[in-house]
Image (cartoon, rainbow, N blue to C red; front, top):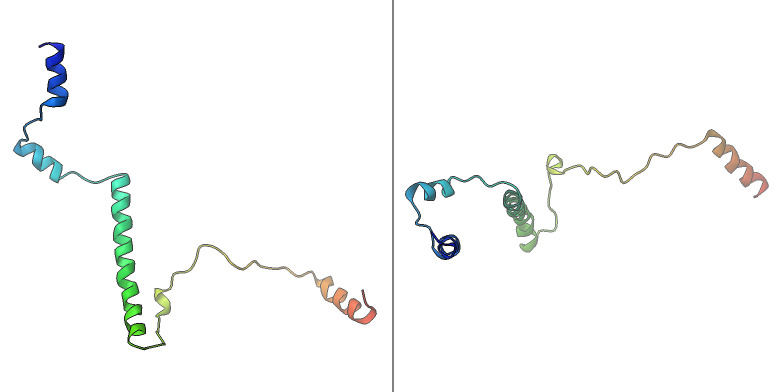
Length: 101
């Protein structure tokens, strides 16, 4: 086989699909980026279904929607910081109130 025939065999000639290769591609598991995109699209579709439950009553003129507290997810981000007040702070406030700054 010449070099040209090798190149033609690689790029120009299409391989004949056999039954076993077609069934293998159908059974192929999705992994990596394709799987992540599929999961994201599924999540978006599920969120859209949930949003429809709330949009329908609003469109029909209902202004109040009851939401089960169990369906509300807590945030992983803390939006409040704990403040430890120094006991001497109250004394300082009282002193400033009494004597001024």
